Image 1 (spheres, helix red, strand yellow):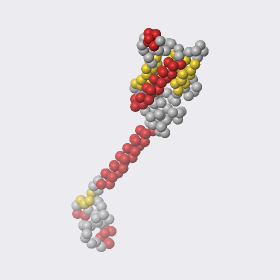
Image 2: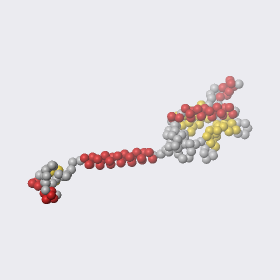
Image 3: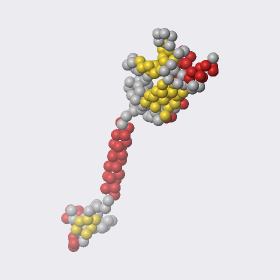
Image 4: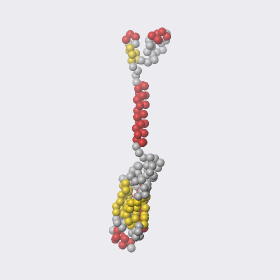
Length: 184
């Protein structure tokens, strides 16, 4: 019996793998052999199912959250359909690191399977840009505060630094109130 199945299918069996965020199913042992792919980055919470059809055949299907059912491949026996389903499940488990961020969503909120509870989007980039801008303004203000003060001309045409000691005397030299006020 096994030899007959190998003769009919060419010795091939169902296989699946995840490549660059895409699930690729190769189903040569289906009644109508097919290679099927699904971009995991664009798919919301969907389910792969085995359904029995009229006439005793079994179909591997994709069921979307909206209730749409897409037939992937028909199989002669339930065992073949379940084997194809399990091969797909194993590929999804092994391909976990290959699924792009923002990949398969658990629900319609946009949370990804790779990071439950986090929303994907560009909000993080805007927040980082805003924080960087604020940091630049702080650094700019600190540098301005440390810049040398303007110089002014004092009595006798000498230049002196503008600051707390611009009155007629030098730092530490006592002045009368009149001298101090004249120097302002």
